[in-house]
Image 1 (spheres, helix red, strand yellow):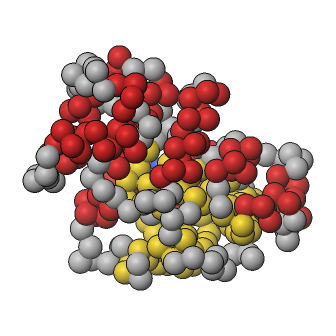
Image 2: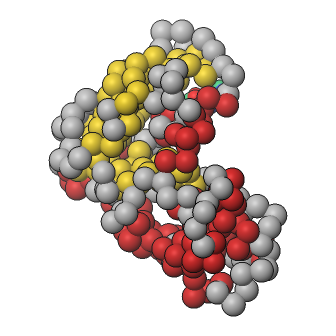
Length: 266
Ligand SMILES: Nc1ncnc2c1ncn2[C@@H]1O[C@H](COP(=O)(O)OP(=O)(O)OP(=O)(O)O)[C@@H](O)[C@H]1O
């Protein structure tokens, strides 16, 4: 399965012939891929090939960069999320994001979890929401007796799970993760990876990772991106191959994929 192909499973996103620019610089060219529901999809590839750029397009986070421009289409349940009638804030509520460095707010653990719910004027029971979200983020048992303490009082790994709890408290359908474990120690990394396995029952997950072992451990589908030199001396990212993770790492169709996953470059 290569650029443009569709995996098994109900599609959530369809990226169609996406070219992504920052000003005159084309960072990513002609990407087409379909992201399936309730699976973990990993974006892998060498630095600068556009993994984070594409990830941030999936919830319109790049809109905050003035020079950003997208050509092509990205649909979410068959609706183009870049259509003029679409509210980017609503897109980001349905499609949450967890970043590389844990970024709790300077608030209590409780207030971190309910932050988004308060913004959207959530009418349910906040205590119940806090417990449910922290349980889903596999953090409840560690923090249930100190919910009023600052989020900063937690370890890095706990802070990242707190950020995951905060993200899922507003009931998104998709959680995007941009290298969520790169600032964590190996034990915290394993906890977040185990969490991804649990979360995919309820959420669709797309993860950017530099760690190929992590992709093999967590991802059902893997997209391998590469960057190629342009005649003007720059580099443009493109999708080389997208398939089941075991195929990408075991028997990829493209030589470049084989070279990358076997550690020959990158
Ligand atoms: N805000 C920005 N303004 C201008 N250029 C950018 C911006 N963000 C990224 N780029 C450029 O777009 C290209 C793709 O970057 P991106 O961060 O998406 O790649 P990546 O594959 O995620 O890299 P890494 O693995 O190093 O995080 C790079 O050439 C980068 O310099």
